[in-house]
Image: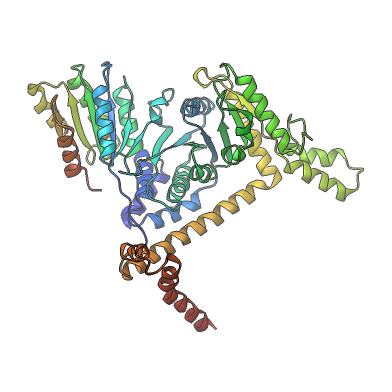
Length: 362
Length: 138
């Protein structure tokens, strides 16, 4: 425990090795990791967290590299968490994003950490959220989470970010792709990277059409969005019925029109524009009150995930006590019983205990 | 509580340092480590010693495998070891060297803190077994 206290102290003092160690503990779920993370909360809340996702080969790592470089030029420190998939068979992984982080090597104020999916049950998104906290407590100004946009799991991860950018490479399919549910829906900013390639204009147009559909047939032109001058709106219309006025301002503030930024990450083109949009979105979040809601939602999810993990572990113990899942599964295969009956049987004593507890409480 | 399931995985950095541009061996090792269930971070070609140190520290790897074919191992590897020491990472990182390293140079590398040298013809199984047996307990 005291070793962990030292570790926490070193992390808060800005020692890189301590930050690296804390993230390892988080990933390994080693003994005492929960106490460590719960200590981190008191020191978090200052970092802007940006999620970057998109299909493999969209140019995420190169863009992240340029973003990190630009933030560093502006005097800000950067943490990067790069998520790669792991083998479902061996658990092994090749974590390859670091290789493209070429502009910032030798600069310890860009802290890059690769993570892979270990374990299940939202374990990766919990680990990612905790690693973000470690970097935040360490004092990073900007934290970038980079993940391959390949599934629901990824969506959970980028949701730990305040602002999510989805990279859409030119020519990524016909227009029906933009109608499908999933990764595109979570974007706060669209990035058409490799914008110098054929088909970039068409991709931008398709995204624009999609955004307009979202807004119920193109009510808003898309330029600017209202969010960040709600106070000006109120000030400018003093003669209005105050109640209408507030409604108007609120309605305005609630609308964030997803911007489309074109970049050529390999040359750094468009990176400044993208950073501006991140800042705009941040301002919108705070002004509209959405940020508070977002953070609240995130903590609610963390509480649920922790409870779910604990309950899950208790159930695994129950299952082991009931003779292990293999025998039960075999019984189902033999047609002797079914999964629903087994679940009822295994849980009956737990339910009875909980009922007893409630009675005791009264 | 009992529900905390540890999920440890051996983390390795496979590094190419200096001017040599041949990384087929490094790729083979990276793939073999992956298939052994390790988490592998590959550095890419032409890295300076300080870049390798930065990656090893930030990624908190258990194992650092340096592949070197250029003959510059006797200058580059000590630089990496010094860098690791600076960050307090030398003690508990298992450092391996691979590639073309003459027999007579090996003793010096061991003195620097390299745990093993795997020359041409070493089987990947041998390397993996060595890592499993010697990866530091933290």
